[in-house]
Length: 249
Ligand code: 13P
Image (tube, rainbow, N blue to C red):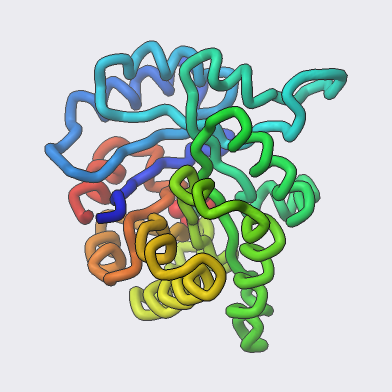
């Protein structure tokens, strides 16, 4: 049985005070759910978030990390630093990192290897742009993103990987992939995994959907057999919305 996950990617939002307020509200309102619940505040507030969530069932995860373990990389954060403050999971390959910070499949491959070497769990994001979908290239593109950054991994690495399919055209746009579109792509991803790693891995990997998930559409998307939860942006910034989404799983 693969795990269900609802993760909130806060992106570059919430100062320290706002972080503490939102986390306190989430702890207070957290429903009884079998899903894993995660939040990803900005780097400067990770330590505070770990402390304020101690003893709760919400995990704090990072939005990014560097591929080296230390060194002269001004402005960057090493995976060991994250682990040292109690952050054991990292989001890699978010489309905003790819689009605005030039992250390529090759760079992400290096980040994946370093995160795994540090014993971290990875939420690996990928997904097509609108033009790719309009021209019918979305399956090829997604397969290439996965193969380039992840398919060099040995079988045992996959228990540390969560996949997050986030079609770029649905991120922050209010336009959601239909539950059928999400299911179709998630099934394709599992088939692609199966072709290289076999059915146990393909059936065991958690695949999240991300892109304008809201309390009103979450349960329908999550009801699809290959959708194991969501990576939530805007709606993770309001406690009631995030809780509403968790209730949809
Ligand atoms: P939105 O939920 O705001 O569309 O963002 C999705 C996302 O990018 C999560 O990583």
